[in-house]
Length: 359
Image (cartoon, rainbow, N blue to C red; front, side, top):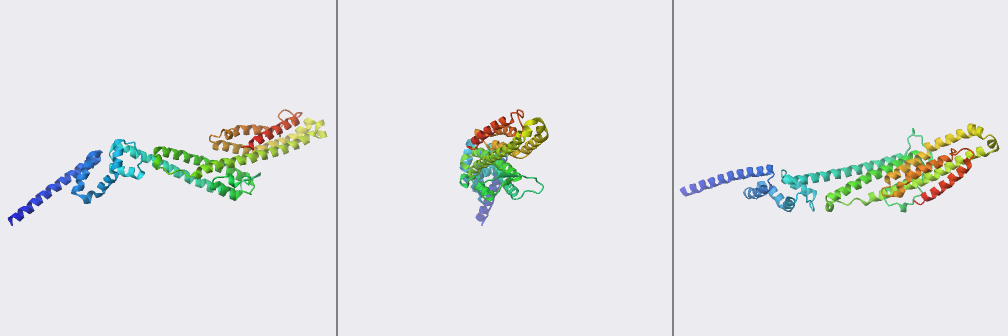
């Protein structure tokens, strides 16, 4: 009986010592965790798991699972090759005070920021596309829009790459666009292109951070970019053609007023009382309608041109076209030479349009 009592007492003493040692080890582990002493943390975790596996099972499993990642980052805190975002997050949680892991935290935060910006851009594009469709469906009653004689039917569907552009073309292929719809398409597509380009830029930056872990950017974005260029150029061609036709009609009418018998005899009087008011009206109408739209399209083409210098040059060429078109409605070198200057301007416009048609 005495021996049994002695054995129980000895077990209790040893158990008490183990408990005291466990508390001490736990305190040392917490200190190492708070101080960012990862080497001590790892060593003490092994010891704690031996004494209290039910308490430290999860921490120990994390250590085993993240061992290779921890070793890689301890060797080079900025080497994130082959490490997933989830692993980085777990490593940071495992040793939150270990200073070299702060690079991992910054790296992860930057990736999440970029991904968030990409998602925001995608949401904006979706809203822009939805808004464009709504504008094409109905022109507000308070908007004074004029018929442009421009359509999308000249673009063959097989010429387009993206499903978005094909759907847009399919819905409004046969409709003659009014000025409100034309402006909606030009501005809307330009804005979509701009935000898509931002997505592409952000994705490239994301690839530089961790190239082997980034999902490829949807090919449809690049297809949309190319199609937007094509649609805007097609609209530009039509607008130039319509501008030349309208300005030429105005020119023919003005010349007919000046070249009749009465006009030749009293040129100054006819100009002042008959031709000038109509010429002013023609110029004003042109600036407010088809020339304004032409300049808008040229501006947006410049924005989406990228590295295409031929498209970039269109804006400057458009300003020259504007001047030639206006010269058909307002004599640039006096009334006497108006017919000759008109013939020259029409020839130059025809030559310019021939070049534009090749775009």
